Image (spheres, rainbow, N blue to C red):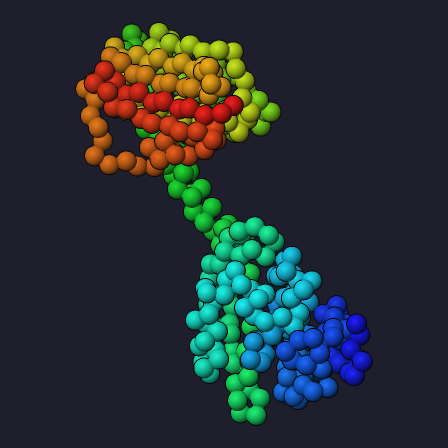
Length: 350
C-alpha cells in the first residue's frame, strides 16, 4: 500500500523511487519513512538519482534499498527484495561476501574486481562475476549500514576466457597445419617419380587439406559420417589404399560433424607425424556403427607404422580428442597405445 506518512519521499527516482514511496515500510525493520534519520533519507535520495547500480544496506539486519539499475541485477529476486535483510535476499552468496560486509561494517571500505559468485537469482545456479565496493555509512557517528556500488562483469570475464581458449586452439591448429603441410610436401617428394608428378600431388593434397578445414566451418544442418571421415583424412594420405572406411550410412548434426572432424583431423595429424601414416607401409582403419543398446561407436585403428610408445605427457591434442570431442556426443573417448598401433574409441549418443 502507499506510504501514508511521507508520500513525496524520495523525490524522483523513476521506477524505484515510486516503489520506495509505495512500500509499507512499517512491515520492515526500518519502520515508517517519517521515522528515518536524516542520514538515511539523504543517502536514499542520492542513491535513487544515480544511473550506476547502487544499493544500500541499513540497520541491524542490513535491510536492502536500491535504485533502478541495481533492480536489474536482482533478477527474479527483485519483486520481493526491497526492505528485506541482506542475508535473506542474497542468502545464496551470503557466506561468500560476508568477509567484505564485516570489513565495511568495521569502518574499512572494500574493493573487489571480477569477483566470482554462483548465484540463484533466477532459480538456477548461475556463474557470475562482479566488480563492486562496500563502504560504511554513518548515522550520528555510528556505522549503521553500508553502500554497495556494483558492476556485473560476467559477460566480459567469460568473453576473455573464451577468447583465450580460442587463441590457444587457433595456435595449436596453425602449428598442426604447418606440420601436416610439411609432412605432405616431404612425403610426396620422397615417393614422387618426377618433379612434375610431385608438384601435381602436392597441389592436390594441399587442396584436400583446405577442404578438411572447410568441413570444420560447415554450417549445414547435418552431414554424412562417411563424407566427414573422407574429407578429414584425404589431406593426410599419399595413396588411397592407406585407409579403410567401414560404417553404416549415418548422418549427424553439423555440431557433431565439427566435433568428429576435429577428432579425425587430430588423429590423422599425429599419424602423419608419428604414427602409421609416417611409414610407407602404415594403414588406418576407420569404422563406426550404432550398437544394440543405441550407443554410437567410432573406432580409429592404426597398423603397420613405427613402434608405438605411450607418451610421457599429454598436450592439447589429447585433451581435444579424449575430453572435448566426446562432449559433442554426450559420451566418452579413450586413446590406447597398443603394440600394433594407436587405437581411438569414441562412444556416445546420436
